[in-house]
Image (cartoon, one colour):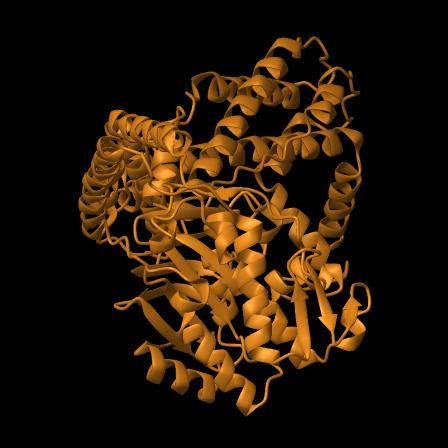
Amino acid sequence: MLLQLKNIGPHNNLSMNFPSNHSVIYAKNASGKSFIARSFNVVNNYQNSELMKTLVSIGSDSGAINIDNTGVRINSNGKADLMYEPDYKIVVFDEKYIDENLKITGFHPNGNIEGIILGKTNIDIQSDRYKLLGLKVAGIELKEKISAVIEKRKKELKKYDVTAAMTDYKAITFEYIEQLSRSEQKYSDFDNLTTEYLSLKNCTDINVNIPTLSFNVIFDANALNSILKTAYTKSSFTDEFKTKLSTQRNFIQEGLMISDGKTCPFCGQEFSQAAVELIDAYNKYLNDSENRIKTQLNSILLQLTKISDDIMNLYNVRYPDIANQVKLACSNMTKSKRVTLQELPDTYLLIKCIDSIKAIILSKCEDISCNNYEMEDVFLTFNTQLSMLNEAIQRINYQIGTVNSNANNMSKEKTRLKKEICKALQADLSKSLKNDFAELQKLRNEYKEFYAEIQQKEAAAKVSKKALVADTFSQLMEYFFDGKYSFDTNTFSLGFKNTVLNDSATHVLSDGEKSIIALLFFIASIHSAVNNVDDYEKMLVVIDDPSSNLDYENSIRIADIISDINNVVDVSQDIKTIVLTHDTVLRDEIIKQQNAVLLTI
């Protein structure tokens, strides 16, 4: 017999082979013995969600218990699925058994035992059994065929650096793929994902930091519009004087700023009277309103010139450079991550507007008294074209950010692809094996239905389970306690000397005596788990720590009873036993008497 536990208590991946009908599992306390015992109990109680919840390892989404060809799958919510009827009739003695069968009744044995054990008299169902066996073999073979296909496909994932340690790889299980086959699942195409991964396989993070585009416009259209719509008075200075001043404006203004009014800041000579008068005239003109307006207009002209220069630099230098950087970075990416940079909008109208505005400014400078300018359409076109350019720059900058992120996260992208590949393989398998899983479920259903029919056909040599349990328990009590305690088979009650122990049993018995009585009643109750005499051959008796609270002598006597269980139960078949213990005395005695195999965790 082979026991396999996956994510059950402390056992993430336990496999134990039982080569003999009698085994002793020896391990220290807190090593997980009880989880092994409870795992055997699951086969009989797989619909008990509370029991199931306590079995799955902390942090795991599901667990699995396999006993030869019998499998139980459990999720973290306690929902379990029995794959096939077990080959064994399993009974388990542990703390749970004591709590549910004796502690709850104050150690007064429960006499609510119903049913009979069927013999073989006048029963001829051999052909039915052969048919049942054929269904089971067909199911096992089909399951093995499906499992082989799954394992073969899983091996393909090595080419894509998917390891067995990955959570998504571990999820590619027979049970999960069967579940997927019953529903419609949409995943990315497996071939496309693997092709994409192979193109990215040798790429590494390349530390790309492509700068974004910026385009800042300093231009006060409202101020310009106000100047253009205002008719200013011309100054009284001669045109010759203004022309001369305009050609040397910057030189004169800088000189006046650093002059002390007495000497020339450039040559150091004292000013003549004529020079002083000229300087005075210059100062008066510079403070004149006409000059101030022209100064403002010249400043706006410079702003517009800078805008034109910045546009040319953006289109001819900065954008082409960034586009090349983007193209280089994308050459190391998968197709799905590559970005085609958006083109900048055409600037013809924008440049034309700028030139028109500059021409109007120059016209205003010629005659500041003129205010006959219609600028609304020009300004509207200018602002519209500028907005289009800024919006395009924003979209381009978003694309640049995406390229930077993709280029600097190649390892994350490869991890993402590997996860998607695993999911896509699950979907592929669920589709390709859909008919096989349907056929397997059909075999399971036929097996269960036919098994139920056979059970209904069996009827003969009927023996009361309750009578067998009572008789066996009475003999065990006599053997072990030698008259100190007795058991009345008619009233199904314990006795101490001549006093019946009902509600008082729990107060009279010592802890050790309670443990002994619980085990003796458990062994006697083997009869209650049997439906026909053939079932004794299928019995698997699992006993967890039977010698708790017992001294050396009682441990030996317990070992005697377990080792002689066939005679104790009075059957000719060899009942299979597994004893889990930390007691070296019990261990050695059972191994010696029963020739049991010693196993360790």
